[in-house]
Length: 229
Image (cartoon, rainbow, N blue to C red; front, side):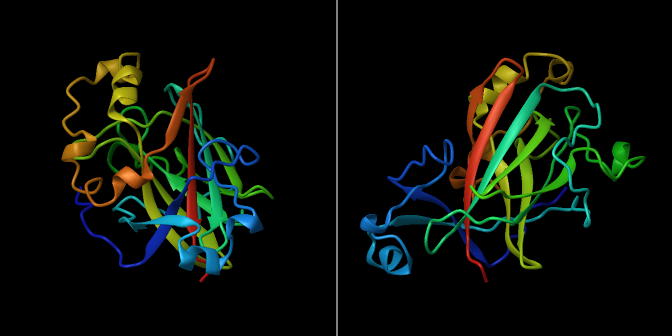
């Protein structure tokens, strides 16, 4: 399961200092007076952190279903993923971007491969962003598999082009708690954590989701800044 290859394109994943209550936790809000726009980014008034693109890995399947709930009834602690997409030059939300995600189920299995070969669709889906730049998914907390830390793969498509390919990560301490419950607890011995993951070590810290508990399970939020191309 070699996922050590990286692409050369970079994407901007966070803007420091501007938390958008209007868009939700983990996203951005920059007014004109704050120096928004390309000039603001260039001058440093808007501080952006460049993070490397990360490999799509060996388990990508094109033309996934457009849907919010990607679980297909498979077991696992419920996870709501709130993925915001913003323009890296202006920090403004992008409406109509297609956010494409895929990840392992609670047992560490990908649909379309190995033990998951009988289905090509579970834990895969696409959502388009709304006026706030938000794409919302209903899934389960991802399982682990040998050699990789816990992660979700993501692509952002805009105007027919892929403008971001990356991976989203979870705090090890949160994963440790999540994995104490079934069905995760039936698979002890997770062999790779963030610090020892070869892909995470190359920019993964900048792609950590912000996560909180809710009555059902977890809510994870991430903001991805992209160049329109």
